[in-house]
Length: 312
Image (cartoon, rainbow, N blue to C red):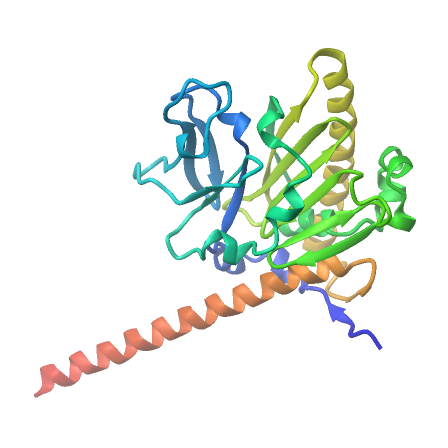
């Protein structure tokens, strides 16, 4: 019998203390290299409440090369580690303690080979806040049981009966039809970034925690091969899907805050994506807690040692 996994407790979606433990170093998707065409034009980001900027530092070709991209902490001006994939996606690491990119995403780049991101023009970005925890939004992205009801237009093109999630190390691939692997590219990068390529365009969003665990800032970037009316039609469609998720997440968070839901069992087939990411959250939170406890114990031992020395 397939092992049944329990969800994270509802308290984890509203706890300030746990919110602090969730802020761990990892690799974050910034976007295709086409986002940084103009030399010196800085693109601002805020990840885990840390402001950073990414920009093209040199070159005059229409598309920048990997060596022409820089990522910098906005406060300290310190340059941050970054990685540009052969297909043109830019990732950044917030801290030096983050593992090597290939260690964090060991089998990602073969999946990206189907899309040439260096040729996908940047079109538009938007950001706004939602009254929900960042995990509430990721819960929704990582399963599609709600799609047929919440996203009727999306479900016409990507029916629930053939939808599947394949989990890898620190990311998930969403398959709309296992028999049509080239029909779009849908990826979730742990902990809070997504990439969705279909309909001639690409959308990506970052689910950014704020100082309030019940409020999340959503940041969306849109790319498309066409401008004008074709991009407008694409943009309207993907924005409709995004707002349907937004409304669903606010209602779900309200139930979590009011105590209507505590915890439950995840469907091993239809919610395996949720189980995967919640398991990673649980692991990292426990690791950080153990580290913090160890630090506190060492501090106590040091204070006692100093006290003993003074008494000699």
